[in-house]
Length: 164
Image 1: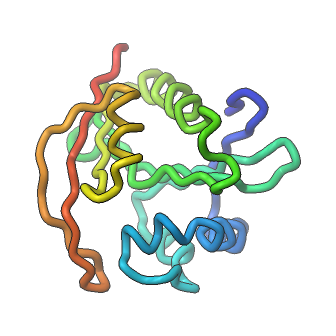
Image 2: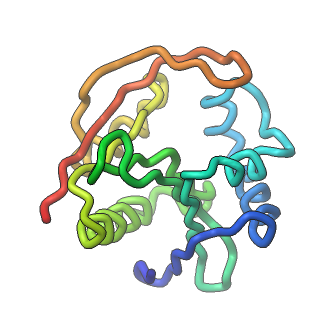
């Protein structure tokens, strides 16, 4: 998939694990906020180990992995999708790329039969709340969340209906 001058492609375990881990290393701000600890050396491998998780890489013109989009299909219900993560390298943030990636992804989800997209946003991540609200997500509920490492936070479950 092409978005402006960027290329989006599905990542594979093994082949892309090092690149994804390097991206995580360039995004310690979000990972510390989400997990309460520095980036784990096994973070990318752990993400690839999730069977239903589809991980897409966002590549720059010079073939550098500058972003990742993780999704689940038919979750929480058939014809609904879940975004587990949209992460951009700090150098790629603030230029509208996230919104363009989402717009293209939502069009693709509709072509795949999807009718809605969900995301959980950390309550203490106000920039993310503003971003997801700006692109059409609505708050559905708030709930506590506990990471595998025991880190506790609160998330806002947000949903965007897609036109098809």
